[in-house]
Length: 289
Ligand SMILES: [Zn+2]
Image (cartoon, rainbow, N blue to C red; front, top):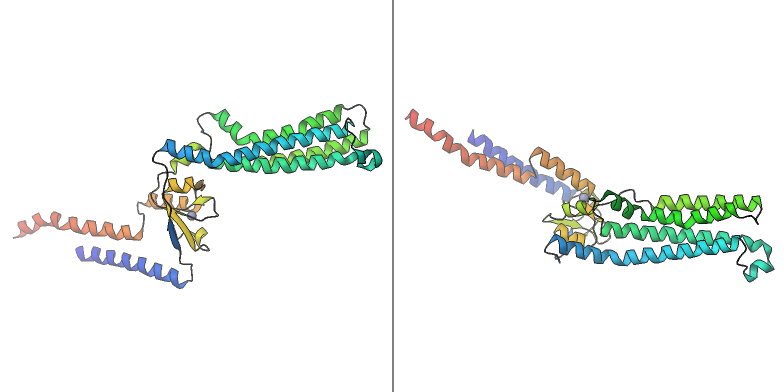
């Protein structure tokens, strides 16, 4: 019995070694590792770092949203002919230049909302207050509505312009609203609770350009990266990596469910059982003697 278990342990170790050698032979990259230190000692300190990281993105988003509203106001003034630019007087074709303003409005909305999304991933809102969490994640969509709906309302209620130009203006603004709204929506929001939940892993790996961190350095998403950064998950979060890679998460859950975290541990378990066996067998030997 004891010998059988010993062989099982040896086989498991052998298999692990073979798997490692096979991987090398398959031509997968050899990673280089750079250790990254952790600044924060507590959850409060970690959140202070993430807040600081997110601030430039938040400021950028607000500036772009303000610019978007400025372009909307300009579009309104041109459409209702309150503002006549020199070239619109000389060349009546240019009276349609409100379209340029709506396009610039849309560009500002898209960039602003994407900066906002980035800031929310770096420094997520708490899920405890559902309304505030929703508001925080959908502020980009709200700004997209503010950037186009007032223009649509003013166009529809304008008494001086003809029906045809009204239809063109409404169609353009509705299309811009749809594009702006859809690109501003965060399809995969992250909560502060989720961030903190993943902040206590001892060793994780990440790449300089990626947005996630990995629990395994042999994760398929790292196959093409030579230079890996490594440290605690808190240090990965401090460096702007917002969540655990889905592939690694699924793998960790699967391994936790089966109660085995690696082939090496399987071997360890077999050895542990081995050391326990003689104690159980001892009384039987005495009885026999
Ligand atoms: Zn991964």
